[in-house]
Length: 77
Image 1 (cartoon, rainbow, N blue to C red):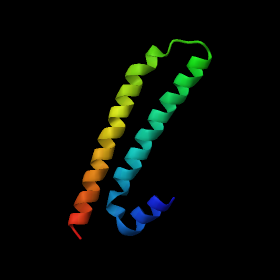
Image 2 (cartoon, rainbow, N blue to C red):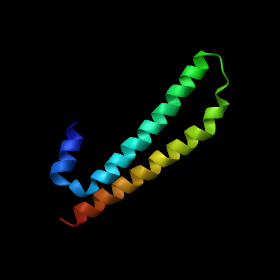
Image 3 (cartoon, one colour):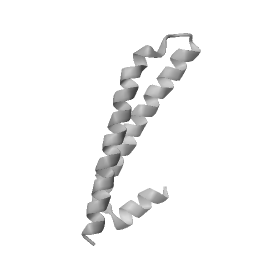
Image 4 (tube, rainbow, N blue to C red):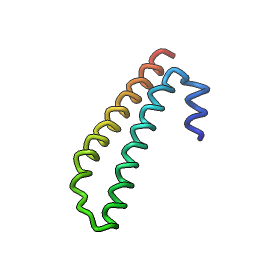
């Protein structure tokens, strides 16, 4: 991916934060997929609500950490 190349070349110090947001997004996507399967099987999806909300909050928190890291890196240039 282009963004990964840019991070590796120009901002290697934020690679960990970038990976954390990818992991958080993958977790959110897994919950969405499981909900979709349950929905197609006629199951009630309410059990996914709290999981989804927590995962979404985690994505948002990781995004904020990444933005802060990018800002700090740019300030140090």
